[in-house]
Image (cartoon, rainbow, N blue to C red; front, side, top):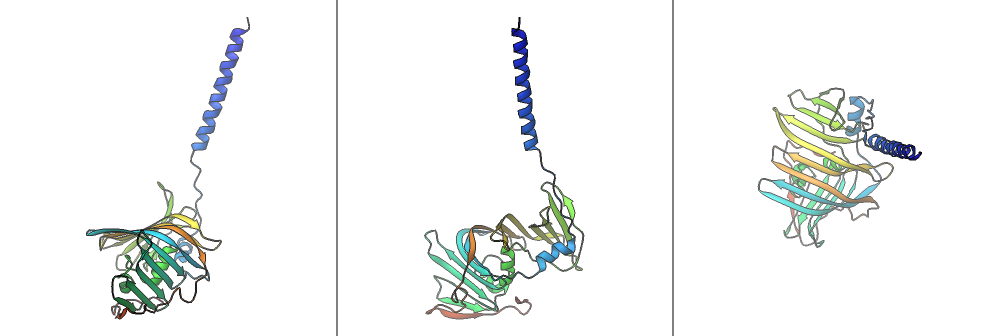
Length: 276
């Protein structure tokens, strides 16, 4: 009779369909080959070192978490910036009330806390900016940090090598005093993924970038930044929740203290390199 043949045909059809589905699943899960950039170390480092300058200003908000052995602070901050040296940071409460304000514009800075009668002014060096922002960088370095460009040490450097798990390009810079820095890039060389600075054989500063996004055709920034200052046992995580181009007014980056605040001039140590 024809029944066994029809049964065998059905079994063969089911097997073939199952095999096809399995192959499609496996091919879909297979890792795509990594497309490695052919750019050299000099070219990659030039992208970090070149000045960040833009006629386009950005504004948005971020969640900032700051940790040290004594405390853990979390909060939301509104920001506005225009590279290379204009920056506004406004820390707010969960109910959107202002807690502190920091403004830098060229060679000036102004900052105050709402509950403090004093308003601090001076040059935007790391010491002054660090009184109100939990990262010891000057104003230009902070703007560069938010654009995905970590501080770089001077020194000789190696050509990038290919690393896996995760896939990345890594090069190493060595200063004459023995300090070293490794910088990781995405395989295509487009984004900086992280930087480690080691002094006297111990990790000193680690910066990690993730979730890069295109703000417009010319501006691409990381949506998540983590800065670990192991020398001072601090860890700061910045998560950008909103960002878009905007048009600042003359008041946006104004460095004059609010009326009623006691002006407190701040100086930078003689060894400080001022932003320029």
